[in-house]
Amino acid sequence: MPDEIRPEDLDKAARQELKTLTKENADWVARHLAMAARLIDTEPALAHRHAQAASRKAGRVGVVRETVGLTAYATGDFSLALRELRTFRRITGSNTQVPIMADCERALGRPHEALELARSVPLETLPVEVQVDLAIVKSGARLDLGEDEEALVELEIPQLDPNTAYRYSPRLYRAYAEVLSGMGRDEESATWVARAEVAEELFGIDADGNPLAQPEDDVEVVELPDVEYADAEGEADTDAEEVVPVDANTEAATSVDADANSDAEDPVGSDAGHQDVEK
Image 1 (cartoon, helix red, strand yellow):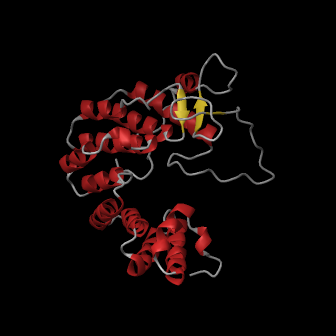
Image 2: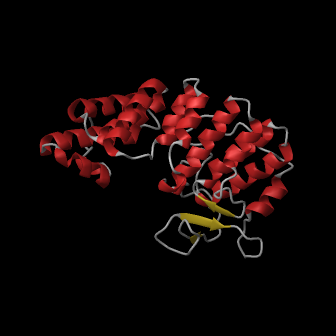
Image 3: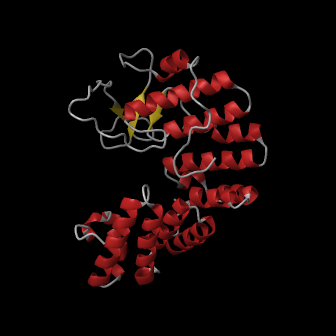
């Protein structure tokens, strides 16, 4: 454990859950959870070992079992991930990891169970971003069953907006493009891929939703258009989730529709990935 890792490096809400432990134990667990969070994208196996270490000291704490489940998922141990996330759900009553749980069912060759689990949760009780991830997983399960048309319908949710992009929009656009491509609708697929690329550039993220590396001082930086902030209902709110309105009538330098149509003749491969879920 690096000496510079402190309990305060763990998310405040997660630290709050550790208050049932003694201070010494809580600090020890918090440091391991902070390391797991730091390593999960780059060294998932090591992240998982840190999560397991935390679990040995705080196995009845929801965030600990959640971290074990998520790191197991990152390593490809889908049986363990599903078991741990079920425990997290039972401890906390939270449905926020249902998309990952359903994707584990898919990975274990059980698409029917994935759909059943996904349908068991009232959508209105989930954060919008979790609703999007759940739609992507349900679409993937439909593809597993050879139900291409139904897979497309699963993605046709209110958040599939070609004119306004949130940070979750690129992965939804790409999932939709992938299904269209599999159905032989390549021109439409290319349009949605281009929309995803525009939104990724505006938000400064890659195809997996990760922040792009900051440029060095000697690298030319291209100014992107200003973005507006809005809440999930679309009202202006500087504290809410970032949203890019893409209206061809505005002065914005990039419009999802306009750029998508201009790039449609140069499509990106339909196998582009998307974050936390499998296709």
